[in-house]
Length: 241
Image 1: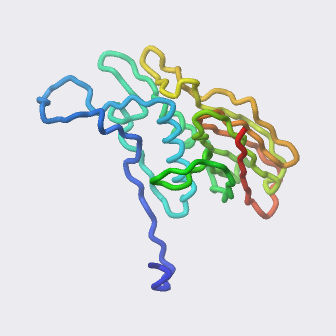
Image 2: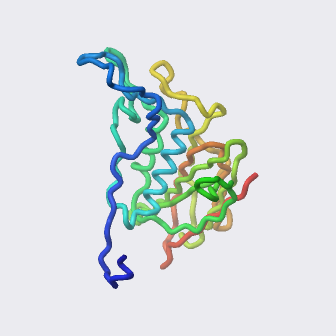
Image 3: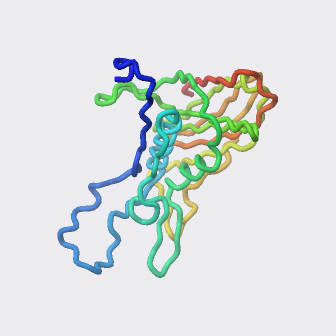
């Protein structure tokens, strides 16, 4: 419409109350009475859900030029990243970690990536790539953060990112959230069953970052950069192992 009207005005977007929600798990509220002690709509999230939330965060960041506000839905108990129990403790669900890592490390300018990756064909959504990725550059600290997910159910995928335009890069930290059991969850008894853990298969050589992303995983790669040239563009490619 802007092109048709020759208008320079940009309409920005607010993505309100996004999250994973298993609506089918909550039958109805018609038979509930005031004061009913049962927990309502308290979805329990697993590894796959964390990868979905990571994908949503990547999508929001990749459209940061238009999406100015992106609010996650309820934060405690009701379809939430944090769970509590009356008279008990509190623990972080799997989906807490992608949100927390993105909020903490994805600072500064979102870099333009040109991904090239294999995937699969879906009858509804068409071609779906195995890997989604984005990156941010914090000019003040010189840190680059790469956020990525591997949706392949069975195989690891090698992420390759050309970093020459960023100057010399070194790996500060590399973590991944994954599990051999994609239905694994965190509970009050096992609050750290699924958490980000160190990823060792990460190198930067000759201006190319390489990382082996486990199947069904959310990965965060933090890089320290050298002197910045005038261009800060970057590109990524992935190959399936």
